[in-house]
Length: 131
Image 1 (cartoon, rainbow, N blue to C red):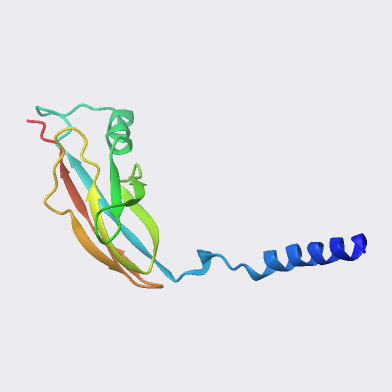
Image 2 (cartoon, rainbow, N blue to C red; image 1 turned 90 degrees about the horizontal axis):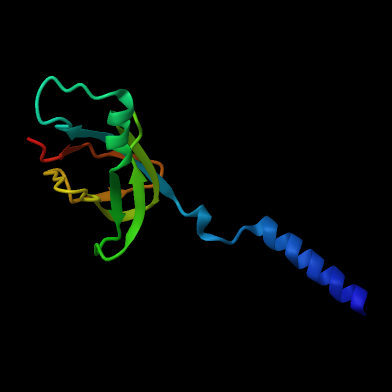
């Protein structure tokens, strides 16, 4: 009898892995865009190293909120080439910047609607406030 119980438990475990009943199969789309950050220096010419420019992008994140802006669902990093991409389930989201210091952007917050299989683009200019 114990052997029968073990076999049933084993088969149930194997089948549950094959069925994949998780929400990972929700239809999703992508949000992508380009982010510009500046000014990075108070005076011209701006002689920052490549690593210093990368650090400016690494220090900033985009926030993807639920439709009510009560929950941050994703903190999205900005790539060194100033682009970002995030895969999202179908739905309505609010995108904003993670306000670092006195950073400001007229482009966000922005409501976006993600549709399955589609890519939506939101380009964002961040003003660092450096003068």
